[in-house]
Each structure stands twice: as C-alpha cells, then as structure tokens.
Image (cartoon, rainbow, N blue to C red; front, side, top):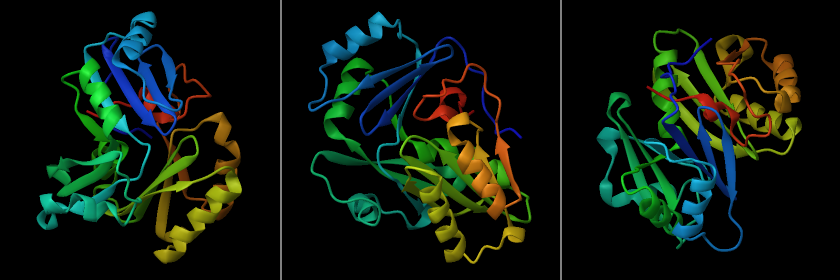
Length: 254
C-alpha cells in the first residue's frame, strides 16, 4: 500500500530536526549533524554542507523534536499559540511557537521551534519555512483514509518516539507522540490508546508507515493484538537501517 508522494529528485533535501541533531537526507544519501551542548554556528553548518555537497535547491525543514497540537481551523486563535501547547509540552523559554495551516483539513498544527536553531537555519537557508512532522504527514494520511468505513490508525516509528494518528474517514480524531525504548513500551501505549477510544480489533485497521528491520519485534507484537495491520510504503530503495526516521528519508508529500 502506498501513500501519495512525489518523485524525489537530486535537488531535494530534507532537514529533519531531532532532539540531538539534524538529519540531512537527499535522494541518495543521509548525514547526521550532532548537536552537543551549544548550537552550531552558521559557518560550521555551512562547512558541513559543503563537505557533503548538500547544496540542493528544494529544501524542506521538518521539526520532530517535540510534539505538536492540532486545532480545528474554525476554533483557532492566533493569540493562543502558547496556550495550545501547554497540553502537550512544558513551557520552554528557548523555544518559539509556530503554526502550519492545513486548509484542506480545516486544521492548524501548532508546534515549538528552538529559537537558536531556527535562527541558524534562516541564516544558512534564508527562504526555508519550518513545518512539523504532523503537518507533513496529515494531508496524505487523511487522503488515504477518506471513504473508508472503518477507523484507521497510523503508526510512524522512529528513534526514541513513535507518532500515532487515528482517523475516521478523512477526519482526524487524535494524534500524539509517545516515547519507546522497546516493543513492550510501544505495545503499552498502543493498548492505552485503543482502550481510551474503545477500539476493538475488528473495528479498525492499523497501518505502519514503512517496514524496517530494527522494528521487527514491534510488528510481530502488534500482529498478535491486531491482525488487521499492514504496511504503507514498505519497500523504499537504499534505506539506511540506522536512520532515526527511516520513513521520512524517502517520503516527500505532494
């Protein structure tokens, strides 16, 4: 099964923002820029890009280092960005709230960006606009779910966290991110969400975004709980098994 995705070109560069650094992903390569105690300078980041020849023209900047919150567009108030985030993350003076408006879904995704990191990216990539992982995935997941009678649960596995989205038709019911260190922790949160929404296995379908060797135990454990599970875009070429977010290495929303 496939999600709608544009064909990547050698000019495409994804910058994925994690808690401990940045992943730079192109059509053919992936490089990780680790962040230690202080933010890098624009000069050091530029040197890194030059060394790896990462001077692409089509750039997307995706934050996934902290959860986001989705607000129905008719209820959204621009003055309440920090208030919306109180339900998901602790207030941090080093961050600035931003938003992505998804008009087609009638949703606004609100998220925090590290102020120093955002300034850094603006210096190196003046035209780049920040987006959140959720805003990047939601339109394609909604389109995939549209017209289906059963609820659809989507799971995006990545390093240290996984993202869960629950849809009824094309309507988003819930989204959240949970920590995990192993399959047991993953299954705990999966059961928790299922119980909160009174979901029996025969009432919904579960889709993993991709199928990757490091998460084999997660897949097998889920099959015992939910036989109606499948994989979206399971066969990407040249996937790096150690990539912190392997699905996004090759998925580019239209």
